[in-house]
Image (cartoon, rainbow, N blue to C red; front, side):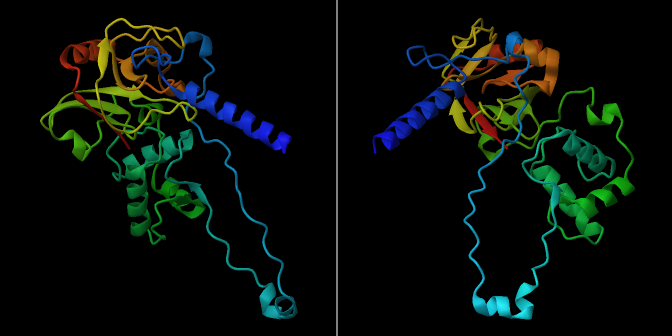
Length: 290
């Protein structure tokens, strides 16, 4: 019993540490914010990636005597088609898929490497036109047909030199003054009364320190701020959710999407975020969505 209690206390402490590390900001005594792009000493901080999950399946019950005696009972059901790529994946193979779908005029946005709703819709459209089950996921048969119908993407097709194309604004962005931030297109659109004033590329936190989604408001701003946790510069910081902020990241400017933040929304164009910082007011809305 004492051993069980000790284990429970240890697990509780580990969870508390993990939750604290997720914050992209200062300690509780600080004014609701701070964190930063990945510091230079953390260049190995991984990009968002999938982590193993606990399967948690119960053991299959043993077959009854009547089942084992029946010849038909030994026949196994048809196996399900395994998906190579599916909604939620983030990889270089997904980037290639998106570039090929763009060649086929089934996608208009530039490749991001993230398999979201637009990629799912484009894959469904391709499958329907080619006599395949319209699942929206890419299995071996779908991938083979997509490869046959398109050519190997060039480096510019995979990573276009221009900025990312802004996603369709979330309905919550259509009124008032809003930083409308799409995780799928990796863009921030500064909008006033439903009109886009400016757009810029952004990146987000890793799987271990994710950027929160939802509707927020700018709590406070700091033109020159240094993270109280990671001790790295956060110029033009606009805090919107606890310690998470929109801010310029020199690391993002240098390494692009090979890195990730600790939960903040990083901007790589210093000129654009400097202009945005001057326009955004405390109390303006922030919407982060897929």
